[in-house]
Image 1 (cartoon, rainbow, N blue to C red):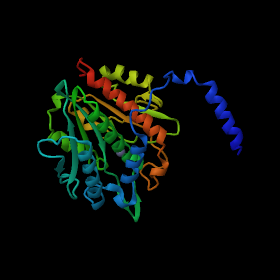
Image 2: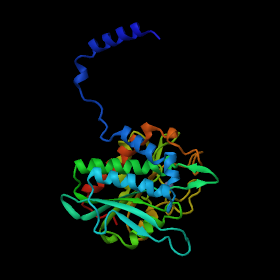
Image 3: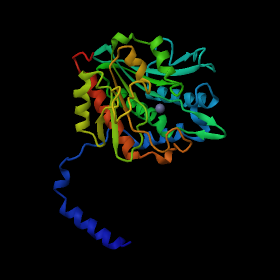
Image 4: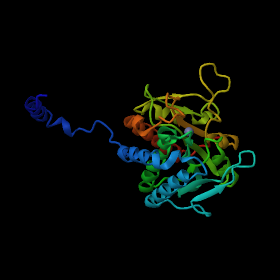
Length: 310
Ligand SMILES: [Zn+2]
């Protein structure tokens, strides 16, 4: 290291750049990457025991998430933040619990945008804890940060922010949410689902849904153009040769089935997918932040659209 040389170079640089430094060239980040990474660290900590639906670890995660809802200042649906549901006789086991918070629209409160992310994961199996940092503490951390941002910058439409339980058992939480929703599906202009948005070796983030809902193509293309990650559209066509169809792979599936246009944000599976090694240390902070900014861009466009998306 040559600290003295580095210092003098900095001084020279500072002198040379004194005037042009005032020119704004880059957009500053609107969301707090450190806070998102910290949230992933909390949810993916061993003490949360992998957050499986119906377990003590899931309940511990829920207590922390409810405290976040409270500190952000989200309003509760009529029946409260928590929605308990029975997994159903064919699944057995203890009940699951979704958490939903509301930010009422300032201009068109009757128009609803749903933002969802599942907080459950696989729990402890054969003595190993599946922490699920990317799947899906990452999506939950982004949802909380978006909630904070929209609390400070009120949306035109109403935002319903939902943390689903029991996704890993086949999107049971989102199906239960739609069986007893705080707003009728007909009032939901669109649903945005976040599931695995914390890392990708190729810096790629997929948006699925536009093949089913072509009126969302301009929204996805607009945010792709301004994104710091490589946004790709797809994974939403049955029978495609090179891509799996993710249409029913996560909590956007039940919304699609109910006729609600959706955009799903997520990355390709990685070596730690559904393994005990899906830990916070393997999250890529810059990717997580860029993905979150991209979702924020999409929500800002969706919030102000006046044309129907169906
Ligand atoms: Zn997931």
